[in-house]
Image (tube, rainbow, N blue to C red):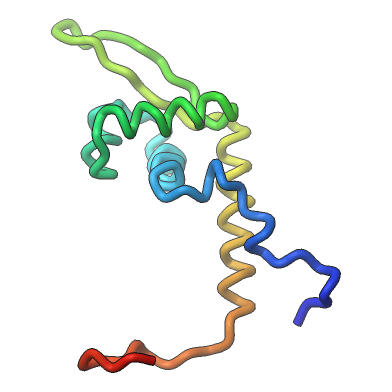
Length: 116
């Protein structure tokens, strides 16, 4: 158990990374290296505007770079995780692991609609 002066893992989470859509974007990009806008939108079930806003936040934070190009028929936007983004994701994962490790062991979820 940590002392009262040790910060709780939740207090150290990076809100830029921790938000569900942005965490998903970074997780996909660390696995695939590059992903186009349409792939990210479909994989994360986001609207164009929603994905665009989350990518903007990640770009502003230096976690993602965007590249625009064309496949001959239409323009496309590609996203790539930066070294800073990889590091931020790694820190986030380690903090979450620490949080999970600190939780007491619990049994399986209740079945049959029982409240716990």
